[in-house]
Structures are given as C-alpha cells and as structure tokens.
Length: 437
Image (cartoon, rainbow, N blue to C red; front, top):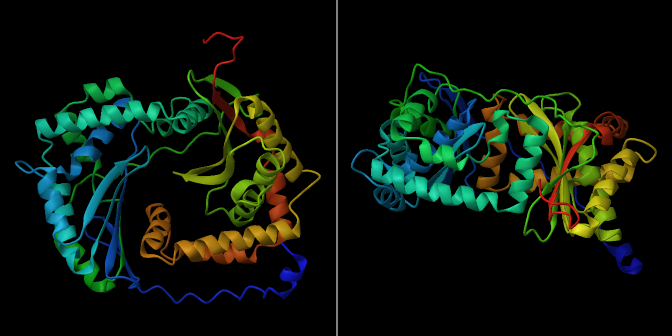
C-alpha cells in the first residue's frame, strides 16, 4: 500500500449495536425443543431440525445414511417427486443429511408457506414409507457417493486422520462402508427410524420472517403427532487423540497429484472458561488469511496451496485441527514448518498484541457478517442449541472474545498449541522407492 494513501484512510467505525433477537424458546410435551427467531430481512423462513443420532456400530452408520436418503421420499404410495412438488408450490425445499453425531434436516420456504413445509416434514417424520423400489434406488445412489467420496483426497485424508487418532470410535465413520450399505435392509432402516429419529432431545429451529409465538404454536399443532418413548442418543465423547508427538503417518494414495496433510490435538469445549482465549490464539496461528501458518508456508515459502486451523466442537469434547495441501516435494517440509510455528507460538514468539487485535477483529467481524443473514443466523444458532446451550450463547461467546486480555491469549497458546500435542497424517503419492503396504 502506498504510504501516502494509507495516511488518509479513515479508521474503521465502531461496530453497530445488534438489536435484541425477538424469539421464543420452548420445549413441547413430546420433548422437542422449538426455537423461533424473527429476522424479517426477507419474506423467507429457514428451518433446521437436529436430532442427536449416535450409534456404536458400522451397521448403524450405513442404516443412518440410508434413512437420511429416503426419509423425505414420502409415505407409502408416495414418491420424492410428490414431496418436491408439494414443497415447490410454496417455494420450499427440504434436505436431510446424517453424520456420526446428528441427523440434520435443513429447509427454507417463503414465509406464507411455513405451515405447508411443517406439514410435509411431519408426514415424513411420522409416515416415511421406505418403499423397496425407493430404497433400492437410493442405495445405488449412496453406493456411488461412497465410492466418489473415497476418491476425494481431502476426504480421504480426514478419514485417515480420524482413524489414526481415534481408532474405531463412531466419530471415524463419517462415510459408511460399501459392504454395510449393500447389506442393510428395509426393516433395519425402519426400526432405526422408530427408535432413534425421535423428538425427545432434538431441536427444531425456525429463523426468518415469522411471529415467534405463532410459529411455535403452528409447530406444536403440526408436529405434535411426532412422538416416541425413546430419547435421542448422543455420540460418546472423543477420547484423547492417539499417536501425539509422533512423526506424521504416511498414507499412500496411488494416482494422487498432491499431498494432503491433517493434524489434530485435544482442545477446549466452547463452555470452558479458557475457550475465548484459545479461539484467538488459534486464529493467530492459522485461522485467517494473515495467520502465521498462511504467511509463512504459503506467502513466504510457497510450500502450500492453502491452509487453515480450527477448533471443532464435538459431542462432549473438542479437537484442534490443522489442514493444508501441498506439492509432494514440499509436504514433509510443510509439516515441519507447521510444527515449528506451533513451537514458536507457545515458546519464544508468543502472539503479539497486534496479532491478537487482528484475530479479535476478524473473529468478531466474521460472526457479525454471518449472523446478518437469515441462513447464517440459523446456522450459527443450530450447533449451540443442539448442545443444550441457551439461545444467546453466540452473543455470550462474542462478548467474552471481545473482552479477553491479551495475556490470557498468550497463556492459552502456551498451554494448548504445543507441537507435541498433535497427531498427523500425510496422504499423497507413494514414495517411488517404497512399495505400497
């Protein structure tokens, strides 16, 4: 930047105060927590239904995927086209996805069509048919997706990291095994629906152009028939990652053109008093475009294409992750450089006041930007609500991030960003002088 130009640039204006969120937060007699929040920036309503969906076996992961694929196909005698047509008539859509921790239904609809969206959702939750022809078609699509996912280097590297750190823990089954998908039948999927896709412990969030009290009443009326004596099952917390402080595990990937590196270490859950300080320390390390990780390995040394770090909140636990992609000839040096930067951050080059201020501004700015839209607000509220936290939790964290002293950020870096705390995998082309195992 030209110094003369920089001298005349005005300083940033202070952030505008955010008006209180008009919302209703209640629990229905069925055990479903319903939160309706008004954000009338567009005549649209965002829907998020999260159901804890933990399971301990590989068959559970396969059955859960088949359930999510067929849930919105309608009841007996119906098909997905009929469901889609009913939603399209009111400008709506629904999509179901599942992972090791939750089954999530996302949707949006024009505000006047919310009752119809809820009615369609209720029909699917209480009367999903799992017709043999529909299940067979969805099974083929799922098998194709499983094969495709396995061929994606970024997904393969993450899967390798999870297995390396957590062995056979359910969290490692983000993609089901082909043989399990092929073997799971209709009765198993239907039984999983009856016992696990239940309202007690689940959260339904509505954000947009709604009157919160009316939206909650409409939800209670239309979803009141979705009930069960069972309670949703949460995934068991992650253990401490294995293989910490060891050299990166090399995972051969024949045909790969680049290397994917993934690192993980224990971290702090969002309710821990030290979380805001660690969040800023992680931002300084690799959380944004001017972080130390990016500046050194991408901008100065040119060893990586892109890289970032983050704190992943899981059921009852959290992990700090680092990821980047690089050319094969630079991969080992990039891993070493990552560990060097971690050592410096918790050692002789702790976060400076300027770095902490930049990280603080970035974290708060991103949150404000995300929450300025209906979709972003819904997405930012969903995770904390499903974890059982109050509706104002994101604002509480933002206030703590805004107020945390710089010395606490440096202490958090020293305590939690130590290189020996990380386990690592490096997925890429096989070494030319070493045969595949």
